Amino acid sequence: MPVFALVDCNNFYASCEKLFDPTLTHKPVVVLSNNDGCVVARSAEVKALGIPMGVPWFKIQDLARQHGIVAFSSNYGLYADMSNRVVEVLGQFTPDLEVYSIDESFLDLSGFDPAGLEAYGQVIRQRVADWLGLAVCVGIAPTKTLAKLANHCAKKNLAGRTGVCDFTTLDPEALTGLLDSIPVNEVWGVGSKLTRRLAAMGIHSVRQLRDADAETIHQRISVVSERTVRELRGMSCLDLEAMAPDRQQIMCSRSFGRYVYRLKELEESVAAYIGRAAEKLRGQDSLAGALMVHIRTNPFSESEPQYQKAMTVALPEATADTRVLVGWGLRLLRRIYRPGYAYQKAGVMLSELRPSALQQASLFSGQEDAGRAARLMAAMDSLNHRYGRGTLRVAAEGVSTRWRMKRERLSPGYTTDWAGLPVVLAR
DNA sequence: CTATAACTCTCAA
DNA sequence: CTAACGTTGAGAGTTATAG
Image 1 (tube, rainbow, N blue to C red):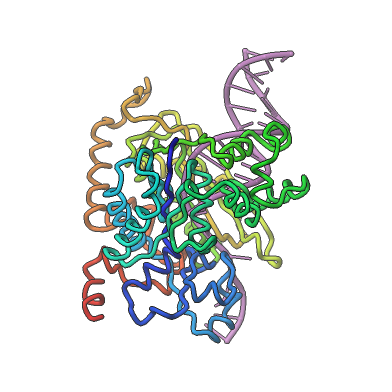
Image 2 (tube, protein in one colour; image 1 turned 180 degrees about the vertical axis):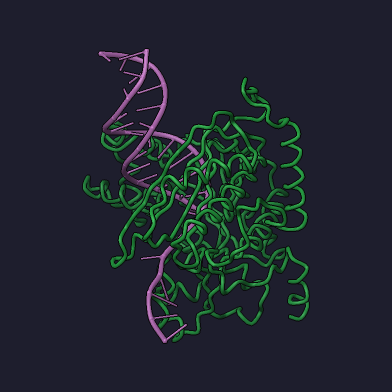
């Protein structure tokens, strides 16, 4: 029987911020989404105040002042670096590991001593705490879906667990009782829509979903949910995916720091987003066969007139050349741009991706040697990797900072930027 | 009519 | 001072279109 462990960092972004500023230890801390928009991470103190996930920051100003909440802009450089360190530590416990997200990993513990799993989980917890100062919880079960659920129990300290919860050694009646007490929306893959549909069928608890008729779920909901039912029963349907496959599409979109009206500024942003997307594209050695550009106004604004439009082009020849992609992107943008609107966001998507090794030279191409272009892009990428993103970029991106996202509460790059080091040492 | 493409919806972190 | 609400990706299911 397979055994999976799900290791999940507690309040990850908020914990990373606390880690490098001891004065924050017992203070309520939140981390905000891009543009300092919504709350995307909350420390335990903030959760205790009842502040919900995803709430717009401006809506909780009074509460924040009242309780001295400290807010940070998202510092992805810091979080990505800490995440890599966590994965490195987890890798010491098993080579079979799937990095599921920036703060979660699945470990394959099949074949480990069944009686020692819980203790093993505690060792993992302790090791990450000792080496990195981060708290993690561990859920252990025969399927990934159940491991997620066990992790939930570990976090909530359900059934008397402290940071580790092992379903494999729980007796069946106790497990059933536990699943009885957990609402069905806690299950992996059950979101708000599905919760409503299940409620209409009289299914409210995890236990009810587990014991539902799989065929009925397949017919009335979907094959995915049927798989979930089987996983809840302990039949493993989802394997560990150790190797992340290449992306099938690559997106880059962002809200602006303030409304944008002029075509010129939209052009700069679209050029910048294409530059970023193309960098990711080259990072997986692919070429894009199609490009989409999208712009929109603020859908939450009731006073401003609304407009949104997207347009896609099938490229005559698949490419990863930022200059070529920007050329097409600006053409698309000029087609969809309408003056007089307050634009809030632009985005680009690269699709029809294929490995660059498969490139078929077009009969009519050959303006510039493809190898030469590839070398230029490689040089650009290596310079930007070494000296920082945006060191070398296409001129169309411009130098304006007017439309760029708001990050007024950014902490130093403690672990990734030399400038952050003195700050760490001073503390 | 069927196969495929394109688009929409839902979910996740 | 005021207004202010994220990003990226996958997959299934549905609808449109081509042959």
